[in-house]
Image (cartoon, rainbow, N blue to C red; front, side):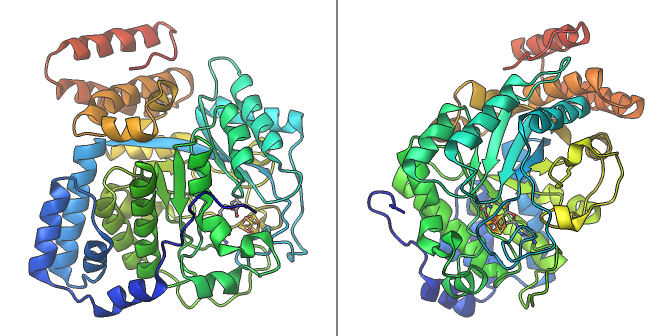
Length: 468
Ligand code: SAM
Ligand code: SF4
């Protein structure tokens, strides 16, 4: 288990604890930080701690307003949609919170074979999905070659107008050679969640005699990815294992470490909260309340303005509804966690002995799209940046104000129009075209606007995959 060159442990537990304990709400200081955020500058760990210390109603209101404003100005009103595809739940690790852990005797183990994987992809394409994240347990079978083969199958499997245009990965961290192999297959983001940045808690939930028991192997995962040439990484923490404020400071420290060491911050941050899982019987004294959850999302938005924030279907539709505007840029929809779950009858209840955990938002993709449209969010299946090479350092360059809007909003409209033509219900179609029309109305006359109109017309005339 060889670490990257110059590997460092950039998490100073004592310092992060002291920040949490000694930082008190200071109205003057937080105003200054909000001002800095409005200039779209990333925050330091100390400034992040100052925002985490906010408790007053007025302070929180201003935090949420600033997060809302920042999201709108950087990302526009689009929300990127994806679906997780669970390929296999074999696992040699024994993470105490997970339904796939090796000691969970009630879990039914399965890995999709080639045909089953193809069938899952067909079903996802039939729903209208274009972006997937492949999810794996950690097992000798799930080699980098196996993962790469699954990625290639996703890109090669097409049905009607359906195709998968971006495949992200959530799998065990690899060594440098392994990352090179999966990169070759054309992956999007490679996600590895640290789960908890707090070392003592990490040891408590990840037994030392398992691969995942090695904290540094995981903390260093993204540095190895960089050394292998992958510049599109996703980090995350599993909220509920330890103090939520410590985890936010850990995530921000991680982002700063990547930015200063490699010149590129993380592409995405995920902040899942622990959900019930098969035979899960552990005490969770650090459960994160809905109010804390809302605050942590808003603080992350301000701390890392150019990093996408992912809120998954672990959260209920009510929470997603309440939190989405504070800075979330990606959500999954129509999610099924069971291995082979997209081939099951729609609306069938979850069976926890076949799944990693219970989800909170069980709506189908079309319902989620309709909800977003009614709230005037533009659902997007765009994969343009990654396909045109706008990732990593380039992505950060392009993420300057206005640029994202210029590419992302048009691409969101085009991919939404494809969805409305090919897959949507009549109600969603009507609501979708209404929002597209309104978005166009608000755009000044320009060459760009004419190009969008021409492409939208072409989509109505059966052309597909038109991107900026
Ligand atoms: N096995 C790989 C690993 O551990 O890195 C792949 C990831 S695992 C299938 C995906 C993520 O699910 C984990 O990183 C963890 O954060 C999350 N997870 C595990 N158990 C969970 C639970 N009970 N509730 C919510 N999320 C959970
Ligand atoms: Fe295995 Fe990942 Fe679950 Fe841990 S979180 S038991 S490594 S699938």
